[in-house]
Length: 494
Image (cartoon, rainbow, N blue to C red):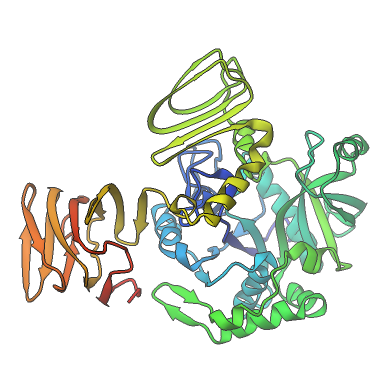
């Protein structure tokens, strides 16, 4: 890479995490990368825009490129959990980002498998490609510095090195792994050989690392020559590479997605790319950088990067504070009052409230583990559940009945379906509905209703240009979501 030309870099957005430490806002079916936590865009959208040709001045993560930035990005490749496929696709569409592809993982297998999938998929089209591996749930506040760091890393990658980005530490952090840099690289000014990867240290050791000045936080972001990564995987993690190759070979296209073969992918060991390759290869390099980075791994991280008032509080939503200091308080749709509290995290959503000491924010995951052990739905989904056609929210549940609010996006339709155990009553409160009921099709307008008897084949569509809102009353002996027999579905779910 030189000042006159630039090799295109393929961004690989890793969107497979569940973000359990950001419960109750983050849930298994709607994790943190799909939430607007650090700007008015979601974290996935911010990550995609950061490596696109677009620019925006909204929010703290500006994507305005530096005039001297050499990094040139191609369309991103997205790797995500199959349960999140429509969320990812829709959020990218809203950002006017057309991905190179979206690969669906049937189960999580950590970052080594994800990197292997990306390298295999991209080298099939471009053997000389450079891959920029980016978790979709990181915050980077200085986009220009990020692009400059990528340009340095690209020069090192073109010299055959596997490059990681080391974040210059600002405090003796015990929650991150560290990288000790060695000698500088002749081929890329600003890049260094990796002397050692170091596990999360004690506070005393972290203070020493900070004082020495040769250590950086391990960001989990990488720039790889795709062909070289495959060679290193073959050498150091052949089981990962073999399973991913088989999963791709046996996989299939599904709408705008690519589904991996589940049985083949299950054979891949669950291991990070750090352990699988970076700590074993003799080609590791690091680019130290100051880019305003955080991995947003807990509520305390959002306090770190948030805009604080005069008492050190970060407030989001309808919140009243009295005598509070150094708190993070977030409330969605509820007035929340906090009095005389210090160093606290308070998060209020429709179906749950979290109160925690900010220093113990990492322990929120224990609550999620308990919810899962008890089989409670609050670990999996919000009261509002998102679907490819829109969303629904449970309003009230009683003996043999349930009331829901459905929002159907313009031009969208539910599957053609029937139920064995429940009837449904639909009231249109906004928009116009096109209803298939048995052999007939009926237009139902605002303030009108229609009845769907048990066992009747039916479909709900929004033919209009504004969202359609329906109040649905279900009645019957069983009201579970698994009492849906899909006969035809444009989203490939039947």
